[in-house]
Length: 402
Image 1 (cartoon, rainbow, N blue to C red):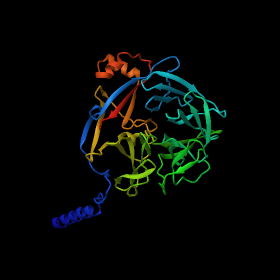
Image 2 (cartoon, rainbow, N blue to C red):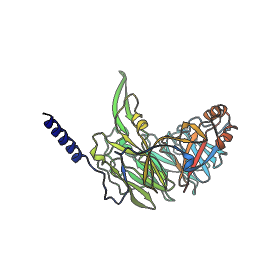
Image 3 (tube, rainbow, N blue to C red):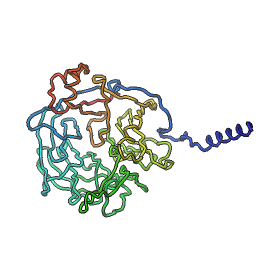
Image 4 (cartoon, rainbow, N blue to C red):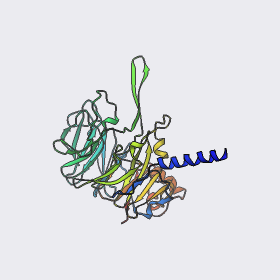
């Protein structure tokens, strides 16, 4: 009897070994193996970057009540209130102007979904969130309207960046949104968008099966006359990311990760296991991408109704050192000048024109409290000593070391 049990155990073990897929060893590309238990470490961002802290000037006109995303060029810092106001500061944080073209007129825009800037032409581009009138409005840095670019109803640009003097680059994420007309999915959703005509030129990435960030759609009856449409999404999952003008594409339905730079689409790495091997997909979500580092999270696309962001929040943060080809599991990432607070969340719509720069905004109220408690160090402590609680955010810019 004991022999039979031992034989059965050995057969099951052998079967498990045979059926267990192995990571590719003959790939000419680096392999990001999501099955490995990587060495754990805490990371002070100052070990790999030089920190700069920029307090945004606070005046009666520049108070940012709902500024969410920042776009930084070599000369300017842009942010915006989704309900209309665009704020422009110089690169040192001095306030330049606030512009409000909110409205539904021909030269106005409605809710701001995405904003991109061209610092050479001194123009900014607003893609508005208005189903009845989809368009992109173009203004100069003084706020003067320049032109409108029509956007078809089956297009929605959640991620939009400046690409070069002629084009913007974006991803059509309409399939992730409520689709009342049941329009067909865009099988080539990565686009170059002409800045003057709005014409779209798809990149050569074709998709057969869209993996949506929206995990549940339902209709909820509020009363007998009101029917609300609700969605549950893991919204903090970019597919398109930028390192200056070098663009990284993590298409969830593909095993190959790509770069797009100088009009060339180049394979960047291979993920393992294949996305097709999962019953519940596990996608690679970029956190930031530079010449020497790629930080990412493998996120399981499962529905957690009470906390939709739980799969993202619980996913490990992995750091791939592209020079050494080593991957580490970062259990805690922080700024040594502010060691008591975790540093990173993913803000997919933010962009720095300068390559190898990543940034984080620190609320003035938090810095004032931490300064009084003696929890800050170095240059950040000095900046915080001059703040008031109701001042604008301080932007921490980290320039990655070579």
